[in-house]
Length: 266
Image (cartoon, rainbow, N blue to C red; front, side, top):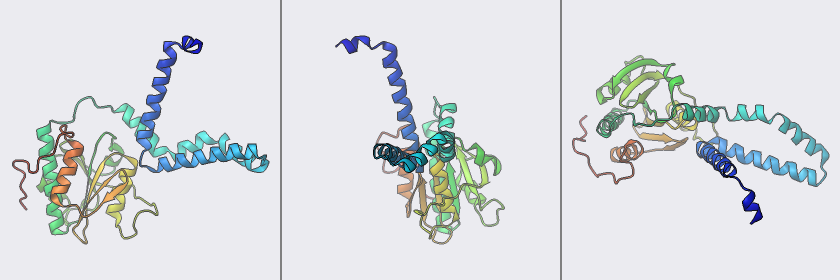
């Protein structure tokens, strides 16, 4: 009881702020390679305590030497996550990028384009920006400012187009860039059967919260990458439902089985 009397309101506020910061950091690294690295650092800390307790002086000296450089090591290891965290702080969005009607229409156009590309076996990589800015990748491509439409996406990924090999980046209801180069996933966990497009989609979603839709040039199959995970062989309706659940302001409501006006026209 005496201890409770010594706690100030500032102490409670301090604890709440620290808890929120740690919670947000854990959300950022959740499902990424950073989570595995944190586990590794935890095991290293445990090894340090055990080596000190068991008087393993050489092992303890090596680990302590590593801890002396921990700040630099963390910056190198967690560079993508640090960049992502700073982007979250600097680009907090208090309003949705566009209205629900516009959002649904844009998502319908993306889905119809993906299905049309798949039917024609035209390879494609469509990236939809979310909270994390893709400005660095946009600047490496060909800048555009076009409203999202099936016809424009088909023309971009046509084999005669000079920018069909890169990725299209969509922000809100606008196509902001095409022919963008993305980081390639080099993890041994990624199947060797996957091509460059799939690896690029996975690589980008490992570093950002973007959504990547990939159409295979060989099989015409549609895949979707989120948080470094790839879901393959997605049909038209499943793709529409997944995108609707992620992006619409009515995300928490049940997705209707068919939305008016959403009809495939290839």
